[in-house]
Structures are given as structure tokens and as C-alpha cells.
Amino acid sequence: MIDITKEVLLDLRELEPPEPFVQSLAALERLLPGQYLHLVHHRAPAMLYPELAPRGFVSQTQEHSSGLFHIVVWRETDDEAKNEALSQLERMANT
Amino acid sequence: MKLDGLSLEQAPPISVPFRFFLAAPLLGLISAILLVLMGEESLMSRWTPGMLAITHGVVLGVFATVMFGALLQMLPVLAGAVIPSPRRLGNILLPLWVVGILALQCAFLKGEGWLFLLAVVLLGAAVIIFVTSCGTALFRATSQIDSVLGMKLALLSLIITLILGMMLGLGHIGLLPLLRPLETNVHAMWGLLGWIGLLVVSVAWQVVPMFQITAAYPKQIVRLLAPSLFGLFLLRSLLVLMSSFFLEKSPLLPVGFVIVDILISLLLVTFSLQTLWLQYKRKRKISDGHIHYWRIGCVCLVICIFCWWAARLIDNPVIVEYLALLSVVLFIAGFVMAIMTGMLYKIVAFLVWFHLQGLNTRRMMAGEGLIQVPHMKAVISEKRIILQLRIFLLALLLIPVLLVWPALYWLTGILWALHFGLMAYHLGGAATHYRRVAFS
Image (cartoon, rainbow over all chains, first blue to last red; front, side):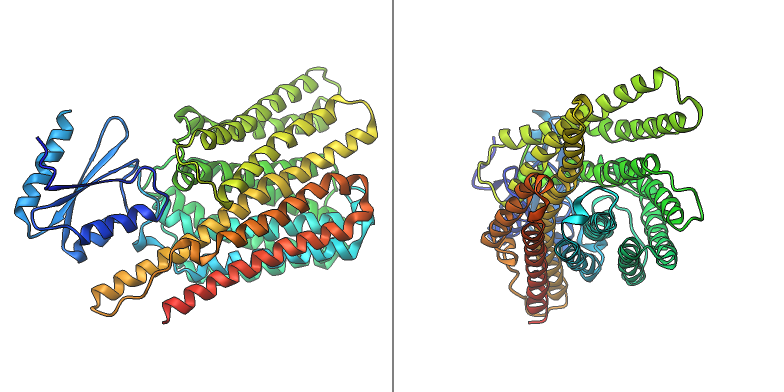
């Protein structure tokens, strides 16, 4: 089961550029300890990736056969968020 | 992997695409003023000096100039095709290109040999430099997005257009035979349908789903459309060559032309209708100027093809001449102008935001204070884009009337001058906005 208090889900599919980028960065700034950001999009957010490391975030991307991309992002120092994010990706891969 | 468009690290400086985007409306303005000054005599046929100067001013001065700037910006970041020293390339390319266009316009108007020679040399040098730089980058491209093949074919079409154009230029001064209208028709086909058409189509695969939030184009269309069109253009050129030199009386040639032309028309109509369908089916129902421009452009392409076929099927020579001219004008002033204007506003606003965002990231990493990055809609306001759209529509709707009633040349010229003047004002405003925020 997904712990909804740990996941911040952001569906970027209906947003026009640069909103996916702007909203993702805003959501990252609001992340609480233990929380991770889960992005859903039609493509991999190439612009966002180089912005993560300087802000202390790490990400992992999974492309589904449906063409959807699931991206999880967590604070580099937050092991609890990392574990939650990676197990969420694992669950997505098995569905 | 499908990437979300642009990567900051590979982007050329904003001044590189911007100098091309700012030059384009000014060159368009010259063509609109020419229309007012030359009067209705310039509209009597496609061969008048005025008509040739105006057409080349728009097609080279506006369309190709915007396309040069857009490709220099888009190739590195969209296709991973890195162009070395983009600033230096822009510094060399733009003066050669602009002076070459002005020389060509003067050559048509004055008919002097040295001006044709100057235009051939300058435009030839500019295109060779541009195609060599972009072509090399594209063949080394790391990303294999669907648009890359179409872009390569568009560049090949540009080279073919250039070669034919240089031959025509030398034909004007008697150094080569001037094979009009056959050579001119093939030159126009490669320039309008090959270079411009294939590039618009290839860019659409990325821009329409991304900025209009539609579903993606069907995979078969994306894979097959550009190479099929390119193959058909080659076949048509071969048929023209055969009809003029080898098999003048063969009864099979007219059939060959009809089959090739039906296929080209079907592919272009498929592109238009598919784009309109994607827009119609989009979940987000909020429309903006960019979408309206695309919609007008696609509708114009369908009407243009209808007029082209009607001109071939009707017997009355006066109506045939009218429909044939209307078809070409609808392609240039309707389809391409609408889509290019819409895309230009979207791309320029996005680039301002994109480069300011990049500046903020660099400031953050250097521990400096951040700047306030404006919203895209604040760079060029939607109200202004809609105002421009109305003027453009008026200028466009006047064209069918103008071709019947050439005395309206002054009103059409003024409306197009207003269109390009507003475009220059809006784009100049966007550049100023960038400078103001970046250096605040």
C-alpha cells in the first residue's frame, strides 16, 4: 500500500511548458522530511534533471509500456523518503 | 527516450536566435512597403519584377530567416545536435543573408546583372554555411527524436532550392538558359513544399503535442510523412526533367504527374486534418493565439490544395489563373505565415523564460541573489497576440479580393505592414523584457 502522507503526486500531463518545470520545483520546495515527489508525464522532464543536484535532490525515472513516465524525486539526505520512493517505483513496475 | 524539449546546458546564447527573429519582421516590412510603392502593376502576373521581389522578400526574408534562427536554437537542445560556436556562426550568417536578400530584391526590380551575381554569391555562401553547420550537427545528433529525419530532408531540400535558384539567377543575366516556367516551378516546389513544408511538419511532431497539450500524432504519420513527401518531390522533379528533355510526347507522363500530385495532396491534407483533429480532441479547452494561428494555417493549407486542383480541372483560363495564384498565396500568406507567426510568439516567450531560468540556476549555484523570472504570458501579452491575429486575418481575407481587384493593393500593403510592424514591436519588446530582467 502507498503511504499517502509520504507521496506528493503531481500529474503534469495537461500542463503547458514551462508549467511542469515550475510546479515541480515549487512542489520540491514544499516537501516535508520523509516525503518524496512523484511526477507523472508524457515525457522525461529533461529540463528538471540538471536543476535537482544543485538543490540537493536525487531522482529516478521509469518509462512504462503505455508511454507514461513516472519520476520520483527525494532529498539526497532523506533515506526514509528514498526508500518510500524506490518501493513506489517497484510497485509501479509490477502493475 | 522522449525528452521534455529543452536542455539548458546545450542552449546557444539567446542573442543568436533573437537576432534572426528580429530581422525577419523588418524584412517583411520592406516587402509590404514594396507592395504599396509598386502598385497594382506588380500584381498582374507572377513574373513581374515587383511580385518576384515581394515573394522572395517574404519567403527568404521572413520565413527562412525565422527558420534559421529557430533551427540554431532548437537543434542543440531538441535533437542533441550541438552546433560549434553558434554566436560566431550567427555573426557571419545574418549579414550575408540579409544583404543577399536585399541584393536579390534590387536585382529583380532593377534587372542589373551585377546585383543578381551579388545575390547568388551572398545567398549561396549563407545557405552553404548554414546547411554545413546544421547538417554536420544533425548527422552527429545524439537524440533520435522523430523530427530529426524530417529536418535533414528539409535541409537537403534547401540545397536543391538554392542550386535551382542560383541557376535561375544566372539565367536572368544570360550566363545560363532561363528555363521558365519549368525550372521556376521545380525551384518553388523544393523551396515551399520541401524546405518550408518539411520543416513545419517535422517541428509539428514536437510543438503541437507539447504546447497545445494534444495527444501525439499517430506513429505511422510521424515516420512516413516527411520521407514520403521528399520521395514524391524527387519523383515529380524527375517527371519535369523527362517532360522537358526526353519524352515530351509520352502519354504516360500526364498520368504520372496526376498520380504524384494526388499523393502529395493527400499527404498534405492528412497532416492538416490530423492536426485539426488533435486540437479538436484535446482535453484542455482553453485556446490561445498560438492555437488559433495553427488552426488558420491548417485550414488555409486544405483550401490551397483545393484551389490547386480546381485550377487544373476548370477550363476557363481567367479562373484558372486566379485559382493558381490564390493557391500559392494561400500557402505562403495563409498556411506558412499563420503557423510561423503563432510559433514565433510561443517560442520567443518561452526562450525569454528559459534563458532567465538558466540565469537563476547559475546565480543560485554561485550563491548570488535570484531574479524574478516572469510568466511567459507577461513576455508578450495574449491581448497583443490576439490584436495581431485580427490584423493578420483581415490582411489574409483581403487577398482573394485583391487578386480580382488589384486597386486594393495599398490597403493590403498597409495591413501587411501593420502585421510586420506589430510583430517587430512585440519581438523587440520581448528582447527588451529579457535584458531588463537579466540585468536587474
